[in-house]
Image (cartoon, rainbow, N blue to C red; front, side, top):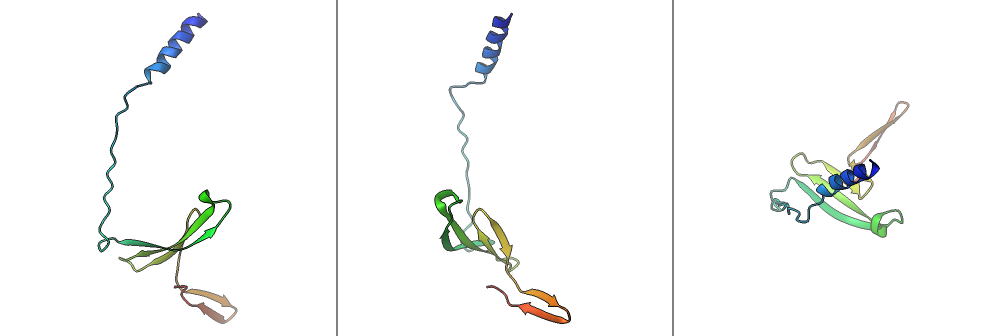
Length: 99
């Protein structure tokens, strides 16, 4: 009984094996430089022992439709640049844009 179950299980496992795999072609079309809504510029690289390849990149990402600008670090995330307001009692401190 165990032998029959083993043979049946082996047959089921081998049914999933296919020698010829159907190649799927993926086509990626990149918009031209002038028509791209999002523009990404690499502005720096720094060493990081925890990163793949021991380096991380610093990027400026600009949305040309809305005018928003972001700063990103590969493998970490992005943050919007802009002015910041902090209040201390009645005094308001305005930090200028980082751009």
